[in-house]
Amino acid sequence: MQALAHTLRMNCNRLPELVLLFLLGSGAAYGKTEDFQFQGFLSQTIAYAPDNPFFTEDTGISYDNRELGLNASWIASDKLRLAGQVLSRQAGSLDDGDPRLDFLLLDYNAFVNETWNTGIRLGRVKSHYGLYNSTRDIPHGRPGVFVPRSVYFESLRSAILSLDGANAYASFSGSRADIHVNAFGGSSHFQNDAIEYQLFQSSAPGKFKDIDGAGLHVVVEPHSLPDLLLAYTYVEFATEYEDAPTFNAAERIEAIVALVQDPGLFAQYVTSMEMEASINLFSAQYTPGDWILSAEYLVIDIQFKDTTILDFPMPQDVFRDQNTTLSYYVQAEWQAVEKLSLYTRYEALYNDKDDKDGSNYAELAGGNPATQFNRALTLGGRWYFTPDFSATAEYSRNNGAAFLNGQSDTSYADLKEDWDLFFLQLSYHF
Amino acid sequence: MHALAHTLRALPFLAWLAIVALSANASAEPILIHNPDLQGEDFSTRSLVKVYAMQKRVWSDGTAVRVFVMPDDSETHRQFVADYLRMQPYQLNRLWHRLVFSGTGTRPREVNSVKEMIEQVRNTPGAIGYIDSADAGAVDAAMKTGSDHE
Image 1 (cartoon, rainbow over the protein chains, first blue to last red):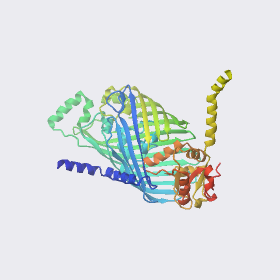
Image 2 (cartoon, rainbow over the protein chains, first blue to last red):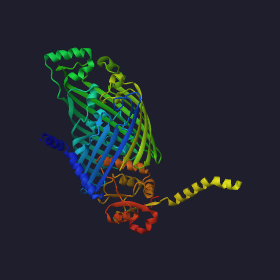
Image 3 (tube, chains in turn green, purple):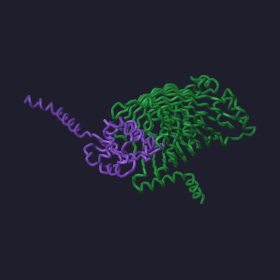
Image 4 (cartoon, each protein chain N blue to C red):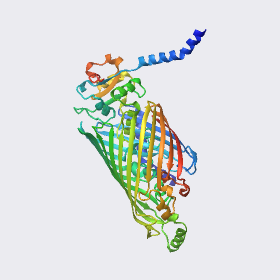
């Protein structure tokens, strides 16, 4: 009986997935009729990380990185479209491969003429963030094996990937420029403990669960420079530390003694915390002929409120209540011949713009300074066996280990400042 | 004997020449076709890029745009994308992936034969597609007003 209740509960949680499976099933029964489209993708990545562990506990080769996506869309009428996608992502200790609903939305194309195209999407909608967020999990949508980690970092993935809510859109085709505006808002959930590892470099007894987010994404394509695209994204999100432990007087004294010996344990004793972040992202992409030149610049202002440790306000010098993260990348992709594209990227991420080398962090919190910044130079190439089947090989030289923040089971104190990373990825779209 | 050896050495080159000549012969010359009701629409490269990127949703009279393509690996498709859109098929494919996998749009409808392409474009209001010039005789002049592209 209990097992049945458990199964039912599981199935209720899985309701959106079941709806999509039904949709996919009925689509498969239909075949590829003109109003129904069904497609998907899969990828397998081999990573070789000789210096620092990447996605896993140990250095060396890992095969533990796979993606499988199934996508369906149904055009119900000129104005109404239903689209959904299930994604299974295995990414070392970060993602366990459980299938989850990436998006499932109803798109109502309210008004369209030669100049305007407006509408609203309801359901689980993808957040519009920068150049690549909406296709960050799609192998051929990425400029390499992964999206640039400086701007699309893993620990904020749940907060910026998709939201259960609404997305209103409007496109305007004017005489001087095309302008596309997306406004979105809703709620989401952290799917792993990467946010704890990002903030504390360890797991914590409580959890960050729910995320409330909203944002605006504006794209301008000026007609005077037809290959240029400029975008601005603003996203705000908030989350709260829940299920925090409670301490009686004796436990509190014990904890204080432990903390004095090892301040790095403070995450175990956090009793409350709220986090608010506002993200400003500036993007530019220029695509003359066989080239794609891209650059993005990100500023995240993070504010912590009501942070208490053992029910006392957190000392400011250990955990500041305000922080600004800066990052950027510049990237060039070149379609050398029809089947081969080559790319290179330089990127930098500074967790705290006022502490670019992490020395303050090392002094005050006792952590590894290298975890507070990351600069990287990446070289890669993608060979298309067919338009849908490709192999991508990539090499990155890293200085600083901030890209590894968010990984669980990682000994952050031991991370090396200079490290290499090699990838080989096979991907197939169908 | 010496002459024979010389000829043998030349064989790979001759074979290569033959392949080049054959593939040049086989190279498709695509022409744009459209539903007969779309005469007078803007079929410039800029407009066609928007149509094939699935950004242009309606024609000037308000008819919904319906885009048809041949399979990715067809020579007609590759030539059409290069000649009319001045893009690589991979770039276009990438644009469609972005639409589809972000849930913001759909790809063009794919047809599997020239016959199907012509029928769909003829019978679907707002439809646009392309065929090889060798098949141009099978469509009326009213469907080819955008084909004087070069």
